[in-house]
Image 1 (cartoon, rainbow, N blue to C red):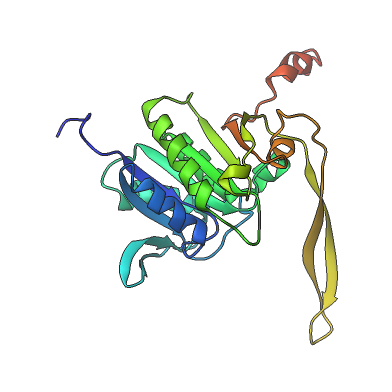
Image 2: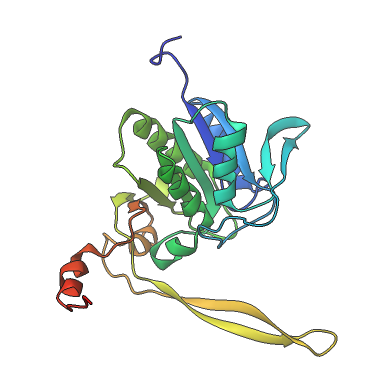
Length: 259
């Protein structure tokens, strides 16, 4: 079989865990494009960002759904899943990695905490074209349109090339297809969480804490992801592994800090 005839190999991961509805929708959608391998955390690992497991052994197990093999679980983070999948599960390097479909938007500063986005970024680091998909809700989720759009974008990306070390982070409103306002290419917004730690006491009187927070909406333009997705636009944000603030380098050089 020639490369042109060969079906693409697609690796599917997430941070909500292998039992989350979003990954099952995403895997089913990708099966219409190619051969799918699912490798996901055994348990939810939201907010893990680019964390990986060191000093503790990782366990890989088969996961069955409705008595049928679905994929593999890894006893670690989303980034662990990508590393293990590429080194020990897949027979060859995938043509595409898709991560999600996440519960809740990964926009603005939330992008930095996202395990869903981190899995895609790890794919880019390993030289694999990668996409991250998120649905903008934590309740009453309807993944129908999200799965459809994920397949549409994945099909296009398989025929195109993304810049090196770059992923696409996609946020999809939790509305019916007819209510989608359009597709907007955006930058990462500035909205962030104002967080607090709620103190409580356990049965022995010892304090413990729950992190809580309120999203501060700081975005005002359609080219900012959080602003656009709240107006029912699907947002596509190109993200890079390079965190350098290049525009500040020349100013920093003028500080003349040489020995």
